[in-house]
Length: 288
Image 1 (cartoon, rainbow, N blue to C red):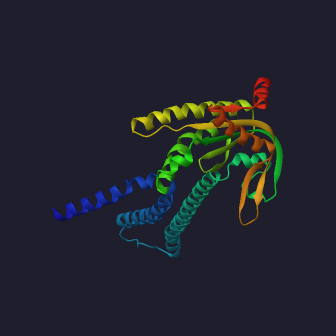
Image 2 (image 1 turned 120 degrees about the vertical axis):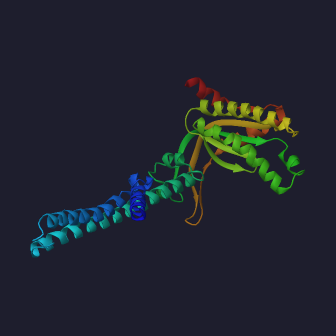
């Protein structure tokens, strides 16, 4: 009884191993090759043993031909199993490498948007070199937090950082949803460009003010003062390019359009309004 129970337990261990989930995964198909390398020789040995049992006069190996055939049955599946295992390992490493590369590209695009690469007429970001530039008509948007200097003087540097992070995490997605590109963060200011229609920039400004209302609602509920911003928009010709050297490079836009958009944003303080846009922006919207 003990021996039967032991055999049963052994069979259960074998079948439980074969039923393991990793054997059914495509990335672990190499294990099937290894199992085949064990099953085929055992099957051949069993059939040979049965034939010997039916005819006691015969030996397990009748001649060198039987020995060669059995050796092939043992070696070929085993070799194929090892090859399959190596292919599986290489496949997993390749998949892992592609995944790491995709993560690296996604992380890099947070610092250097792929849209800028397309505007420069390059296929990959690795093709962009210092000095590459292109002139185009765009809408430039500047956004600035009102009285930020006074506000930051009442907080520690870590508190200022957390405040900016909380604010920017709420509003940065607005620009990409409206076909815009954030050129840079300048402290509490945001500079963004819109290569397409000026309507995208105007829509982004509207969404930004609406998002700010919701953000301030939460700040009031937690006892904090509301945040006020000013937004300025201007459209015109700019030069977009990569400035710097092989050691440090940054992509930005240069031109009077950028300077005027910044000054327009400053005028929101004087006129006590949240947003001002120029006639060039309105004309482009009307032409669409």
